[in-house]
Length: 121
Image 1 (cartoon, one colour):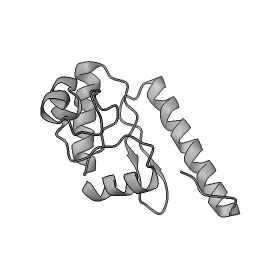
Image 2 (cartoon, helix red, strand yellow; image 1 turned 120 degrees about the vertical axis):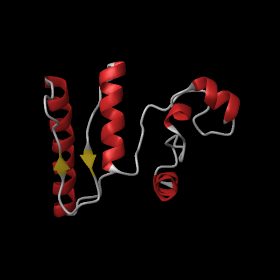
Image 3 (cartoon, one colour; image 1 turned 135 degrees about the vertical axis):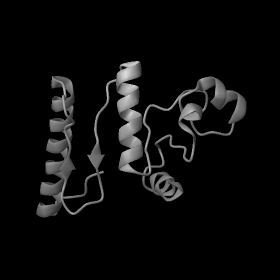
Image 4 (cartoon, helix red, strand yellow; image 1 turned 60 degrees about the vertical axis):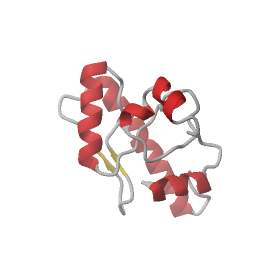
């Protein structure tokens, strides 16, 4: 995770990214302010969580989706030779539209790289 944070800081310096936080810390303004005043998140909770393993992310996002009724997008698998866009069992219309949008953007990036007209970020 620390390597991923280092890459994000290097490649996207304008993004507000912090790393290696427990989920309760990342999602609690109170804990962030009181216990982690040095956090790059400041006094606001994280709006995106990145997990080290697919299984950990899948468990967490499904719990949040059902318990808090959050809108979730994913899972999206990165780092493979070809794109993988996964629709979960019982996906609703919004989840399908979100995943199709990500797939289209990914396909546009592949086309750009193939045509050597630039890079996608």
